Structure formats: C-alpha cells, structure tokens
Length: 227
Image 1 (cartoon, rainbow, N blue to C red):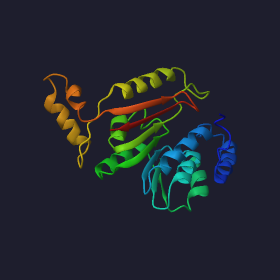
Image 2: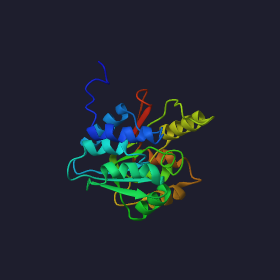
Image 3: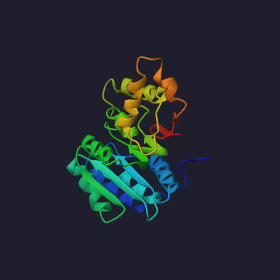
Image 4: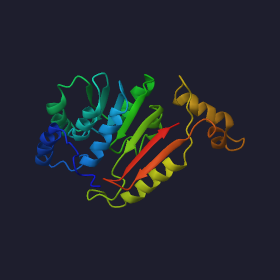
C-alpha cells in the first residue's frame, strides 16, 4: 500500500502552495496530514470546526474539502501577511470564518460564549504548548483534537523536542471531566472540591478519559478524543 497514491489533492491546495513557497512560509500542512483532516471533517456532517493557526490556508483548504454544505469552520491567524494568502483563495467560501488575532484571545472568547467543536486542529504554539487546558475544554464529547509536527522538523528550534515530549506525556496522562451543559470553570470547581482528599483524578476517571492515538506518520500526528 502506498499512502501517497491517489491522494486527490484539492486543486486549490496547489494554487495556495505556489504562493506559500513564494512567500517563504515553511510551516504549511503536508498532504498526508491534509488528507487525514479531510477524512475527519467528512465524518462530522453539519460539523463545527476550529483551526488554530491558519497559516496560508493549506490545512484550511483540506478541512473545507471534507466538510458538507452545512458545516462551519473558524480559523485564526495573527500573521497578516500569510493570512492574506488564505483569504485570497478561500475567502469566498461562506463555510469558513477568518479571525485575524491572537489565538489566545479567540479561545478565551469562545469559552465565554460556551462554544464547543466537533474537531480542533491545533497547528501553532497556542492550543498545543500553551492554552492546552482551555483548548481541550472547547471539545464536544466524542470530538477530535488533532495536532501535527510531533516528529522532528527542519524548522524546529533547538531544544524543541523536549517541548514535544512533555506535551505528549501530558496528553497521555491526563483525566478529563465532561459535564453536559457545563464548562471548564465547573470542572475546575469539581477538582478543587476534592483537592487534599485522595486522588481527584481517580474520581474523575469514572467520568471520562482522553483517548489518544499517536501516529508515526506524515509529520507526526496525535489524535485524541474525550469519551
């Protein structure tokens, strides 16, 4: 089996890629990752999706390619120059909303609005290495949290591998509480209630766990869901 055969790369991805290379942007999603994202969004009819880190819109285009006409995508980027490439090629698609701002500000606002998503693709520092708790709180039960670039990359800063290892360890060992109709503040209040009286995570485990799959494939993928 050759996983790079018949990928059916969307035409618009190749168009965006040309401008991406010309702009010198080196952090775009690669085709295998894009193909996975397309499959996951296709599994959620009328889905509500969040992409943290639009970049030039290559990952965005793959997400959109799997979405049906009733699905919606919010994507956020703080770099005006690269975001302009994405909006040039994808801005006419009514299913996607572009946010040009700090992702941390958007995440805070989404939590305040008690919004929840069927899939979150965290493709930048925020949502992975910072603001992880807040980002996971935006997941619906049974939804997907997807991160990439977990295998060594040419553009990694020195020492970044330790950040990756700590992130994966955190995801593997956490217990998450799902409260229908609740929010992250309620969950934290629950934790405070049991602090100092045994192991709160043991009590939480009977409610839900974060189910994780690590893929030594593409750029290194981690997929997680709450059950």
